[in-house]
Structures are given as C-alpha cells and as structure tokens.
Image (cartoon, rainbow, N blue to C red; front, side, top):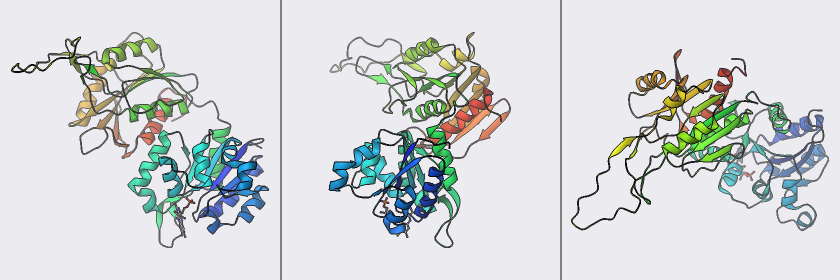
Length: 405
Ligand SMILES: Cc1cc2nc3c(=O)[nH]c(=O)nc-3n(C[C@H](O)[C@H](O)[C@H](O)COP(=O)(O)O)c2cc1C
C-alpha cells in the first residue's frame, strides 16, 4: 500500500487514451490512494462519468458552473483537497491552457488554482506532440514546475500512425505518482552544488551597462534538476527574467566581480557548474554620473579591462570542488575551443554549446550540447533545456559516484 492515505485528483482529458485512465484509477486505489476524478467535456465523449465514478467510488466532477459544486466542493477546494493533481491523458489543449493561464472549464480552473504538484501524462498524435507550439507549452510547464511522465513511442490508435505521443502506461504513471508522493532522498542528497546562471551586467555609468543575450534558462533549469535529485543548490544568478526555482537558494548579483565573490562565499562545495555567460571585460572606470552627450564633442571611448575568470579561478583554487564543470558558449570552432578550455581552466567537464544565431540556444528553449572531457567528446542531440539539465544532473550524480553508471 505505497499510496496509503494519499489523495489524488485525477483530471481526465479528451483523448483516445482516456480508456487507460480507468485502469489507472484501479491501480492507484489498489495501492491505497483515494482518487477523485474530474472529467472535461471532451473526456465524456471517450469514457462515461458512470464508469469513472464506479471505479473511484465517488462522484465525478465535470462542471465549473455547478450551483451544488460551488457551494459544496467547488474548484478551489477540489484543487486543494488533494496531495497531487494528475492529468491523464493530458491533451494538447489542456497543456496549452495551463501554459497560458487560460481558465474556461472546471479542469483548467483547478489546474490554475491548485497549490499542489501537477503531474501530466500527455497523449496525442506524434505530429501534434512534435509541433513547435506543443513543445513550447511543455517547456513552459516544465519551467513552472509541472512534472511529466511520457509520452512513449509506439503505435497510435489511428491506423498506420506511430511515433512519440502514446500516453505512458498506467503502471508507469503510478510509479511517477509514487516518486512524487513518497520521494526517496535522491542520489544527490547531502551534496552541495554551486550553479551560476544568466549574464552579467558591467556598468558604463549609472544607467548604461554591457551585457549579453544569456537568458538564464539553461542555468536555472540545471539548478532545478540538481535540486530534484536532492542536492542543496546555491544558484548565483546574474540579472535574468527567469524566476528562481523554488527548490534552490538563490543569490542575485550584477557584475562578474560580484559573481566571483558570491561563488567564493559558497565554498566549500562538492561540485560547481558554471553556466553563466560572464562578461570577459568591463569598462575600466564606470562613470559615477550619467555620461552626457555634448554638442560637437567626440563620442566617449571605453577602455576595457579583463574581468576575473571565475571558472579558471575556482578550477585552480585550493578549495576547488571535487567536480568542476564549465560551459563553453562558442560561435565557431566549438569543440577545439572547448577542449582547450578544459585544460586551461582546470575543469573536469566542459559543456560546449553552439550559441551562433542559427543554433538559437541564447534565449531559446532548445539546446544542443557536447560534453567534453579528457576521455573524449559525447554529443547530445538537440533537446529542451530542461532535458539537458536532467541529463547533466544525472551525469553529476555519476561523477560524484552517488549513482552507478
Ligand atoms: C477521436 C478523437 C481523438 C482525439 N485524441 C486526442 C488526443 O489523443 N490528444 C489530444 O490532445 N487531443 C485529442 N483529440 C482532440 C481533443 O479531444 C480536443 O482538443 C478537445 O477540445 C480536448 O478537450 P479537453 O482538453 O478539454 O479534454 C481527439 C479528438 C478526437 C475527435
């Protein structure tokens, strides 16, 4: 009875895979969970509320504007009186609604109102799943903390269609529910890891600065993925629009020198991952007052001086963490530059990513990286920044020998 005493609110979306949700309810209840079900209008076209209600042994909720429900249970209470909200099947439509904050039925109202973790089991045609809009929505939801299980590869209900888009099997969804509701300590429990993220801003005067296009998405995703594996994460972030993952301790800085100091203050640590795009140079003397444009005067000349090299400094420091990983953002000669960096900076691994305009990594949601170590180069296919983060977090656990390779 691994889920004994746990309350699962199951939202059934309108897809062919809704029939598998009937089995999911059985499997969850077998393990001791109480399951309450909400069905979308479309879901009722695929399976009946009668079948769902019989299996949950409870009434099934379908309407947002239900006089009885709003007085009795209502969407707010429904969303709060659960330990976990599971959406299975999660349709393209439900994912799009939550990613964009749309609320026009009971299911979407619950998803927006809940203060509990949400687990989605997407199911859709492979072309729908591969559509850039669906990819964007998934990346947004992952950033917002939604957990995913599946979809899997395989045959679709439509004849002759196959690919990635099949809903995860009920037992896979149950395993994900168990992981979320009774989390094990995680392979990185007890490990302190520093992650830097975002750009730095190097002042020219009180209103102007030199910056770069780093969004912080990759660094923040890595911090969150490490925390998910149980690490105590110290995120040292430059100025970004991305919010801090709730599970990490964040320190905010502006300049490279501040970032250097903040990283130093976090030592000792078991590992450090330097994802931030730190400015190589700063203006030698930032003006104390706004530099004025004067008629007829020459434009000001900025003399640049080098910023501290955080990766190289920590890579050769007496308090060097056991594992040091650097990021090499390059626009050309990617691997040659990354290999050179490995030695020069005293890093164990360099994650080389192509940040040329065509690659779209800077500021985008996708990334294609290569992992460079003394053992060689491992090229990863293009994937979401969250997926890169999860893979890298597992690699960190392997390197720190907290999981078997
Ligand atoms: C036969 C049929 C099968 C469908 N299967 C899916 C599916 O697997 N995944 C999906 O996202 N949408 C699927 N749709 C489209 C959804 O039912 C439609 O987008 C609906 O508005 C979803 O509503 P909901 O998100 O409120 O449940 C299917 C539609 C039909 C007619």
